[in-house]
Length: 483
Ligand code: NAD
Image 1: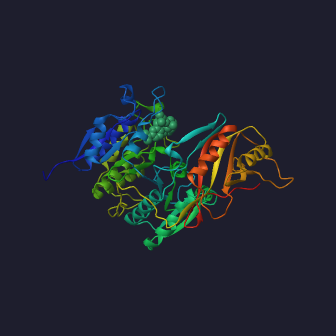
Image 2 (image 1 turned 90 degrees about the vertical axis):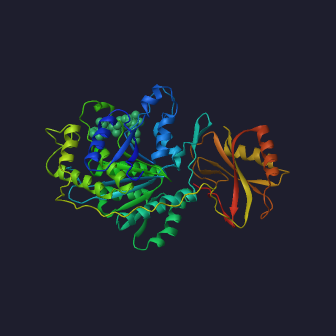
Image 3 (image 1 turned 180 degrees about the horizontal axis):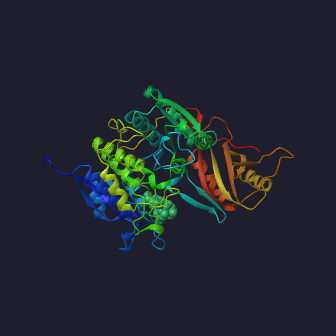
């Protein structure tokens, strides 16, 4: 049918969720856009019904139909297992990019007021340490896997540049810790440097994440768009929310291959739930981002302008510093509705083009190499022996095999061989033992690795094995650190 209403999935969520979502829906409806909300359950209510993922099938079906979600915050209730409904949604719909814009708002006083901050964090949302792949390797040593893929890097870098183009932005910083994590964080930096020339109209700069945090506190006005890995983005985006007035004003969009989820950055705020005092701005600005996404840019601009006019007129929410008589959630939303169609004195409407999404594919993604070979193997084992004694034991185990012990590491430090008089490090009962093929240039076979593991396993507890590979002649593993 030609004049069907645009269906969107609406998840009221937990705590203050239903209050701020209903305020946002009222504003969207008043903006004149004909939407048909499919009100759907997720979060605490779903856990109480015994739905382990926190997201019922009907909600998933609704999202598959509508492709667009306006979502309130969801709690992860204690005592209902460890699942998070947010993680379920993020994983199910692979919302790989998290856009978190913040800007100076009139009347929202912060130490940075007057510096016209206008920053968007583009956070990779599905990879990195947040894949949640963790192991206790010994009773006292835990390990998490930081997974970064070339495909994931390409998608988030392209999204950042495409967003910059669509939003008329001038500069994209890529913030990484590539100086330490050369292969994982370094992959984002290299991908950024390869893709940046395709967007010659945008200034592209790499910055180390620690300096980025420092610069955000000292001279935040230099930043426009910042693209970064998942955990860095999680931390930086809360920092930028703080620079501009706090969580009550911070909207976000979770962009997937074919589904987008719009939500406030804040959580369910149980301390103020049900009191009609929550600030609905973050959810209302998220709804404006949603409208822009579905091609209703004019209504999005109208809502953003009405929010600015409302703040300029002196209406205040309870979370604004120094507020004597704050408006309730409903009063605040009604004030925004009454200001629809008015223009802000402080900032004009923004010009956005449609966002070109990075390509996605259901094929397995792989980077091709012409030559590859395994040159050695790292065996992680549990032991309370001193490094020299362990080395003597492992050298004995290797005699008569095709491999030689090259080094032993402990928490990233080389502890064998070490120069005489080298400083001692605190040792834990997890050792990384590196074995290389004795005949340089020869490839190490699976059979040789299995034979080595069998021999080591007779005397020690090994728990993790990593092949040392070369791709096109380049070592595909980190060098060891000498102290
Ligand atoms: P929170 O964001 O809910 O609250 C932090 C503080 O900010 C509280 O003092 C709260 O009152 C205040 N606050 C938050 N939003 C506000 C608003 N709109 N207006 C006025 N004040 C506001 O963070 P939390 O307390 O750490 O988390 C509470 C619950 O929310 C947890 O179960 C957590 O897992 C969940 N959570 C969900 C999401 C999400 O669904 N995306 C995000 C963060 C936290």
